[in-house]
Amino acid sequence: IAPRTPLIAGNWKMNLDHLQAVAFVQKLHWTLKDAKHEDGSVEVAVFPPFTDLRTVQTLLDADKIPFALGAQDLSAHDSGAYTGEVSGAFLAKLDNRYVIIGHSERRQYHAESDEVVAAKVKAALRHGLIPVICVGETSEDLEKFGASAVPVAQLTAALAGVKADAEIVVAYEPVWAIGSGQAATPQQAQDVCATLRGVIAEKLGADAAAKTRVLYGGSVKAANIASFMREPDVDGALVGGASLVVDEFAAIIRYQK
Ligand code: PEP
Image (cartoon, rainbow, N blue to C red; front, side, top):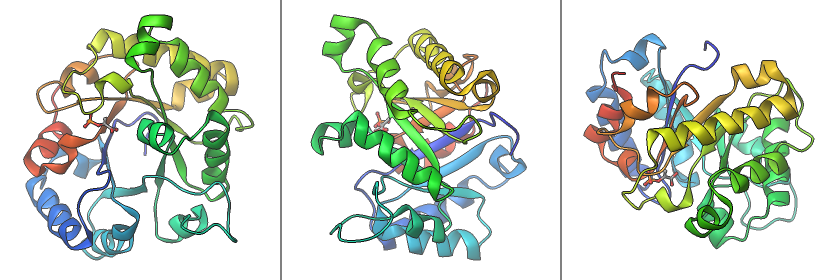
């Protein structure tokens, strides 16, 4: 894939069991037939629940469906006595290309600290997975510190110990925009994504900053995707709710700038 190929990523969260997943992926594939993801100009990735990954992997492989597969989380550990955890080694073996790390729902409901996020980023990279590192401010943060301060601090922490040549994806997801129907403005997304690219430059170097995809996420839908994709520092979208509706997600993938 060419550097900074736009990435449209669907985070299913805790939706669609493995049977529903098959129907969904097949329908999405048929809806998208001849769309631009087939020619490599846009990369599409789906992030099903853990229990769906094996089934979806088999389907993508059998039907040669060009969607990348990703998990929604992983363990910071590689193996051992960690009941309920899932190793990056297992995800890599199931052909996962990506893994979401530090989603605001994990930070909020599972008390994931910046240190845990950093350890998970390293675990992903150890196993050849591309971490999709999520950062974003709450509405209280926004009021107190402005838009960039918290995402910058979160990304700085997440990149501790990451090598300059590591492939990563960063997703700017303002918490107030997730699932609220109130997306950031394209200008707000651009400003923070550009600032985050500056953090990548500082921590990993100019080359990494030029190659790394920085996504926007938070109430992205077919009606607003193009406005985000027109911004120079927005390289794609992490989509929650709208990624569960075939026609809506297909329309997002087919955005025209
Ligand atoms: C998300 O949870 O990553 C997300 C962006 O959700 P939504 O698109 O539903 O706002």
